[in-house]
Image 1 (tube, rainbow, N blue to C red):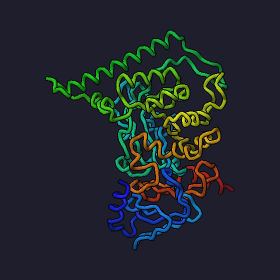
Image 2: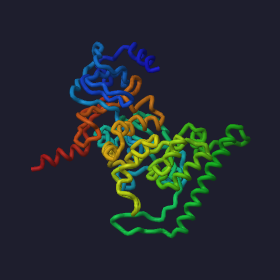
Image 3: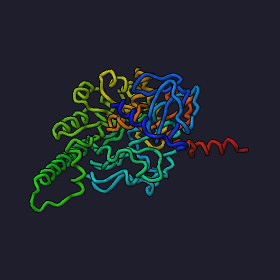
Image 4: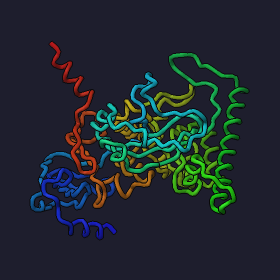
Length: 421
């Protein structure tokens, strides 16, 4: 299949002088899906990767980018953000993530994305080319979108929308541990009632969606389309993954049982205690979106390094996972979250894959992004070293083959105050 794609792309004439057509040469290319190519060359045409090799000649009229001594990696994917939906959390008018009501599967994050968000240039300056931006709130929050961090409109930024349906799986929450303050508790009886009510509502909503599905398939008399139920059909049919936010072991177990009963594709998010169920997750082929490794213990008796070692434990168990920031302001630090996992046992190659190839596969776009392979979009970051190292600088960034301006608010402020008398 790859040979056919390569032959087709190479047979087409290359557009001379095009912004998304070039030959990059002299760099060490890290495809992620295969072995590194030292002193390699990379041919890109119309935003797509055409060929990778040691000695590639530039077709006539194609510009050449010299990258001797540099490194080329696929662009990083952040699998959990609200980028484009929320600007300043303390200013309500700039936050467009929640809606009234507990069940809003019809909400589409993609159409609310603000391409002019200041978070976008700050995030991509550190090599992040693609993010999941997701709604929040309620029980079923809505449809998350996978977007490129470049474009004048949300239509230009869209890579896959919807990418998933977001479910805040009901859980008993009676307070939390904080080093800086005493534990606060809500009466257990009250939290248990709220939990049981929400769980029952969730079951009833899915049953309602199933009845709607059958009525539509059978052409029931008087059938009327319903936006909420229509949005649930791809989930019920297994075409759209259900991302369940489930942190604790008990909640993860309940989410697994619920997904098995409803026969839906499940992806776990923020599953802090996934290590306790790693064998079951592997057996059921359930992927996990991990939160920041640079995190404090959640309980008084939790090991200080549990967040650091979790990725390595899931890797050893064979569970597919991706790293995510669950943040807007700190999405740029995602490579360093992965780096901490490397320091605590995760192989470096697996850390890079958890930022690139694995999230692409989890979101169903492994044939488009996530690695440097012919036929995929040229989402590339050119660095002067290992992207997991804080000293490494991103020298150039390409999204769909187009060079992206690395200027951003942080850099402008840095330059401004460096010049202060």
